[in-house]
Length: 133
Length: 405
Image 1 (cartoon, rainbow over the protein chains, first blue to last red):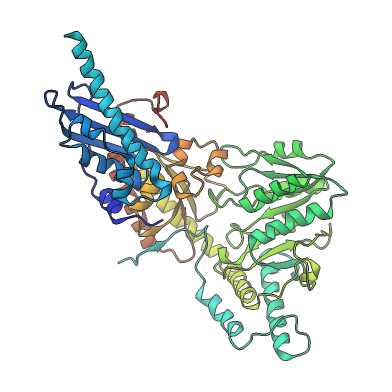
Image 2: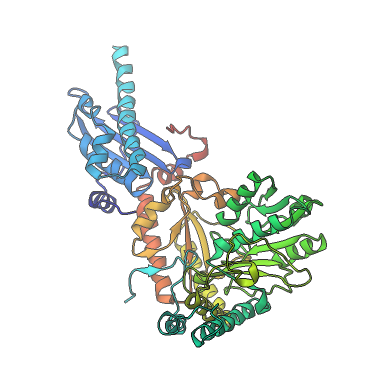
């Protein structure tokens, strides 16, 4: 299978690889996929609780080149966006940007799920705080 | 400097040996006769070349040339052996025994026969890839007409105990077929000492051309009869009609001759290179696992799982090296290898497997290059792997509740 230039670029130079402290109140972590399925993505966001702007994002991915590229792209896109803007990112946008073939669409779905899971995790931490106030 | 890309996928196919091409050339040009033309020089030349080649193919496996049926390749040989025996001996019985790790050419042929009313036992294999011979003995009934067990597996290279399986089959009066495609020319093979009644071979797995194969069919003790699956002009003693692929057969004959003469030296060299590759990888990387028995294995085969690194992404990182992966992502079905699954390799590790197939033309320099590239890429991808990070934190990945789709 031939990969698009953008997939190859993200694979060779993945953006925002790494980890943020999971326990940090401002960090939301999404872990999606399963080793048996051949794809696991961990996507983390650091959110300004005043503005709800995503100030930083990191990822690590076990998966094929397209999965790595999808999650790398997702971290690039969420940075600087507000949570509600980030929730607007659709897997089809990722498919289009990376020219993913039909058999790789699940990689983009997983990346969208990872963004949502990270935001949900962050909100869980903060809804908890709100309730406490 | 090593020449790129490097071909190390010799289970898929092998490059044509230049000496084979030289032998074929006249039959692709001015010696174009039909081997079935009985009344002129063109036909005689072609027929003589075919018979010389048949001798060489037979000599590689200790057979009589009259026991070699030329086919279009191993898939046809497997179909002819299994369907041909099933249809010919239907009166005698309706039961066939094979194993779950066979090539699709056997498995799908058997499934086809099940629809036609035959009963098929698909034997499991042990974790090392070998069939348990007690399972085999227990599976044989008085309705069993055929046992088909491959000599060497195309993914993990595991070599079955063919001699003993042949002995069991002979003792119980059951015909024994073996798909010897991966073994042919790679390890010693003798139809008589191994009690083999039918065996499939392919030219392009032994540095010959594609599109030509052979089925060994025993002529005596016992005499094996087959119902043909291709009808027509009655070529190949009625077992396989169709004009003979003369240049292909000449190439096959030359390839078989070279394999017979060079086998001892060649297999020792491939074993040495394979062991160097394995030892280097094992020294430099943790958590890598060999799939299938290490001892009973083709000399040039190494099938390994690199935990926490998905196979396709590893292949992408070593794109100047041609190897293959058992990862789902590399197959059309999105299922990881059924062979690894049968060996009890978990799906998580099946996704991380790579098959290296060292062949006649691989050099030590290439093996060193491959080892370095794999080590460097696995390390890089593990830095990217959340699973590796979790494992290093001491999290048991099996205990995690994965939010799978």
